[in-house]
Length: 408
Image 1 (cartoon, rainbow, N blue to C red):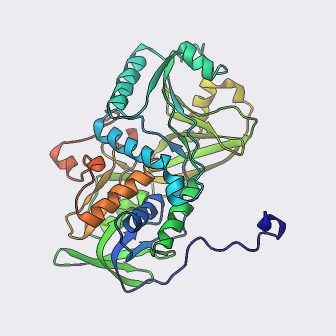
Image 2 (tube, one colour):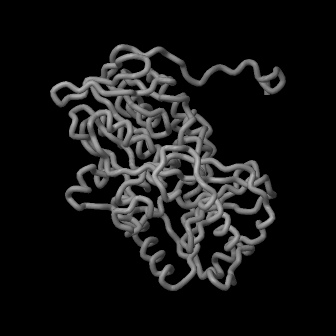
Image 3 (cartoon, rainbow, N blue to C red):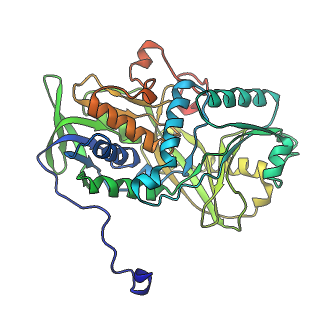
């Protein structure tokens, strides 16, 4: 109230803007949600204070501010479901832990199904979720109609026959998550260094001694890399080639509308997820652009496909206008599942390959990566996310699409 009446002139920065020190025990490359969460949990959970986060741009300027804000744990395979349920439970206590409002709203997610085969697949996935301690309910046609009576149930091509509901899922304010973790990490002594791009690694006798940056050399006991769609480019500087491709993932938002969608709804016969923001805009997400790119912009076909999916299930929004679109750079692995593991270079660790699932994984990823950096051992929730699984064949192919990143 005081700031509103005094022209908003009294706010103080949420975190410091320090110069880099010559050496840290831990250097985390990447100041997005995952990197900030890693630093926060290193300080909070493992008592480490000699920690630096290096961000080539500004905090909140990457994928953490470019996603569709969905949080869920509705996966089929044990390797994924165990981790995402662990992350969802962290989400449920995150605001109290950070003492910061990230606007986490457990408004549910409903995956619509449109035929018998899809119904059977959803039942199987729901049972797998329950076996891993998550919540799941299968709704028949009437059950879906009770929640969303205005959907297009009698679409000639894609009639709605039911849906898989996870009530504990929902959305959060993406940039508030970055600010909350940054504020919490800074309060525990972590140096958050913006406009500091990593341009190389100093590796001696197979051991990573630190990183070369645009602000000089920074020594480190351990280096963790978590830079999303830039993973391949950064790790290449250490002589490593990753099983990852980078693609643009676009999203779009409509003009503000009256309350329409209470939760998150997905279209079962295409890749479309739809929710409504606190400002009233309908938020759409869909497929990645099928070509490799390091740009944060995409083409119109992916946007058109998302709009077609939305109209198929909710034709009443056909006259709503798209207000803006944007894109994020996602790191797609060969099996569609992430990596949290050490690398062949001693002292260098990697966290990436989050595909479509990066935002909902933020607290779980940060916790597990901090555990790996601090203890040198893999957290049980991330035990399947090994880098060598692409050599051993222990893949986590959630969609069964094979080694085609653009299909996951």
